[in-house]
Image 1: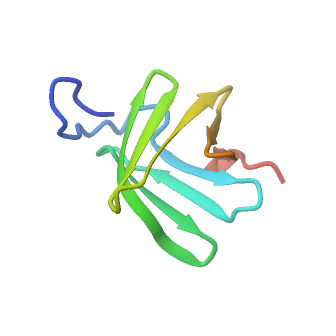
Image 2: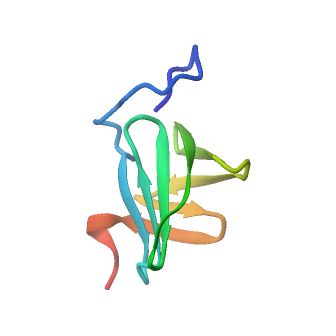
Length: 94
């Protein structure tokens, strides 16, 4: 989702991982934005965490605006991140 030659985000509205990812209980919601940023909501707290993200293959790295870093992996249409399992917004198991 970023330009490999610079750290400037490159909009990519067609990237397969752009969009909303949600835990099965709906408590954690990651919105991966096409400009290389993310916005995470937790429960009733919208925008609990925001920052930059970069996808390389099936791996994602997060750099929160507060300095926190994390990573995750996409496998079989599911995002595994920091012990959490997130599903595409439209494919959350009920």
